[in-house]
Length: 339
Image (cartoon, rainbow, N blue to C red):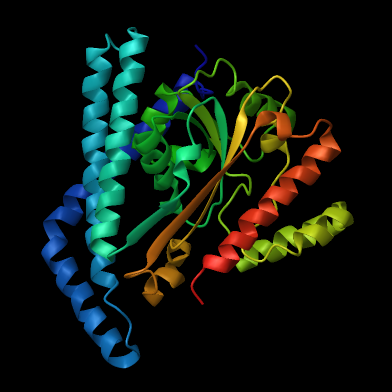
């Protein structure tokens, strides 16, 4: 059984020595001041509504922030109990099973609270293609919140347990740090050895069963217009041909090649499932969130599956195929995004 890439024990202990107490203390402080915070946010919303007609988003943000902290503390407490129950991690099968259950509960509670607080509708199309595994799931990345979608729509609905490719910065979320290292995931070091990173991503596909898959965000980061311009400027310098094709993408960043191509390796006998979505773009940045456009919006999700035998051989052919699929993702977003 492969495990997540692990930092040296000293690094892990130092990081968790401040991230876990910080989140607990922050939760206690926010809980104690929640009535004042709510009243202040409500007053701000009333003023913003009177001046600009902005929906009440400040008070919603405060309430969801408290729910996030509460679920985080609950998750850390539960992870401690499951660690003890699994003989301090020695009973690996129990540790995996219990941590997967906790991960599902964590994502379900947060996504449910998000929909209830912001009044979000959900429309899912073609999710029956997700199962069976093994599969590689490639997801569009628009905001931090869309990381809740795979657990709720792929794992919870279709029973596919996912191994994630995650950015290293998420280790500063203590619940993700602890649970993420118990399960089979890889936290990408963006400044690390690229060949080693690609190999670590490829290894996630080893030993997949019929109810498992690997999830990756091919863009590597959340889409914003500013990031799009930076990526295109860099591509124009190093790969003008690919830059020309990437410029046609209006709603997504061009896919990075290292991780996705590693998961299309001939040794990885997996179909590929693409997951496009709209409706959470209003949470991509603080500025967009404060605009209030996300309130009452509809989350639309579309899946499609490409059988392994339809994926071409050869690096250049696969790059062309990957861009073609991502153009399909971009076009779908363009046809379903709100004006």
